[in-house]
Image 1 (cartoon, rainbow, N blue to C red):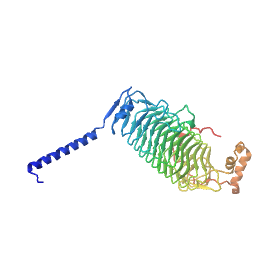
Image 2: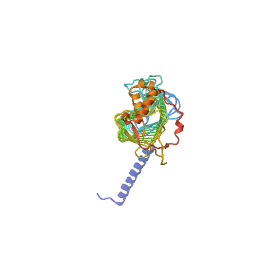
Image 3: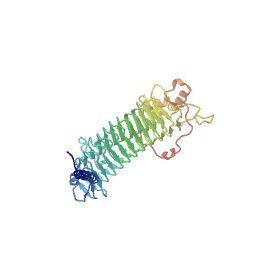
Image 4: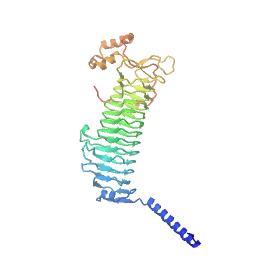
Length: 435
């Protein structure tokens, strides 16, 4: 078919009109995300049902007793911090879609069924790129349950658990299970069972969280290639518990006032633990079945036991650390010596050697334990005799006759001065009472 000049102009005009309509339609679609307002006394659930993917539902200040299900991509935003209460049953908010953002809400009063895993906010598997930010989650069983999600973010939330329940009957502040690339940043978590329970996840980032008044600050298992940094974990039964993991970076954290341990490294490999402060805990570090890790530039100060080393844990690089004013610097019972401080040397506040050539390194080997220490750990009733002349005599004889020497942590060239010049700020804290 041949077109005349006029016919060509008609066709071109039609094409231009179609293209213009398509462009206008795309523009309308991109700009068509609506903002739906919910006023006090109205239903949030009704607004969620009416919203289209990409919309924002803004909730005015007020009290709303609802159970919400979000099954489409949208933002639920509180204005003036509205309160959403589950009335003591089920989950308060359940997320069933990807790219959902929850912001500026007070979420409270979930159920208390541990089997059903009742939570303030429950993010179901497949709900990727979820964001929960600037919310208060109070009086829930689990604060936030995050499962089977990729690239989700939990940011700047305050989470307070059920203080009226016994610890074992509570849920965790944030539960992270089977996730990839989760970011848990700048949250404040207290009075749950465990602050952060993390399992079977990869490539996670935990930064800037304050975790306190819990059983474990964190219960972290089988989650590799992750980063813990700039967190403060305090006044818990146990601080950071990092177990059955590898390829972690644990840096610039503070763990203080925890009854059992500041940082537990259990069955951990190929990880770097650096520039942390562990102060006034029952045990600063508890290291169990840990191999091929680097511990350097940590400040271990004022604990009942600075480091409890057990179950092997010999093939680690431990260098450039400061061990200051711990009641016992090291608890180590084994059949052979373990050498620390091969390159930089560690500082030991109870070192009694000297530095004759002035190079800043001790000329006498530091040994953390002797035969009396070992007897004390193996037979606790020996504590009753520690101040007796017989125990002092035994220490002296063991030093004079190496055949009586107990295996120990050995630092051949300990440093004479600590690297951390700010250590005194921790000296006024006292470890919790222990046995």
